[in-house]
Length: 165
Image (cartoon, rainbow, N blue to C red; front, side, top):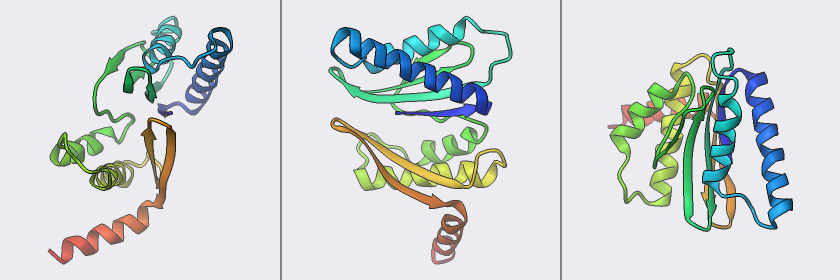
């Protein structure tokens, strides 16, 4: 599962190419590629185009033999692993929310709410981030789509909560 930010054509192309390469790996090796290997594959592919005007930032997450994995890869071939990332032009707003609300022992529901709130702030404050909060949960048995919420609806909900404090 991944999310992309940047030029639509670049993101679409590299996402499709990575999916194809991961599928080829699976057919050859009779097992799925690890999250680390998939992210390394993408980083190596885009590094060859460094300085040529690509515009892409992505988070790749998954669950493999080593457990959950989360990686950030950008169009310069930079690849980082961490517990939390935000990508795209609205990411600074999302980081502000995540930094203030993240703790290691969040419940699943608290994590959903923190994610939703962080994405809301990114999309509400940044004109290029869209108007919908799509929330997914990566689990050991695959990913699930948790919710798809219009930013306007969340805006009024959060404003009402603020007034009731």
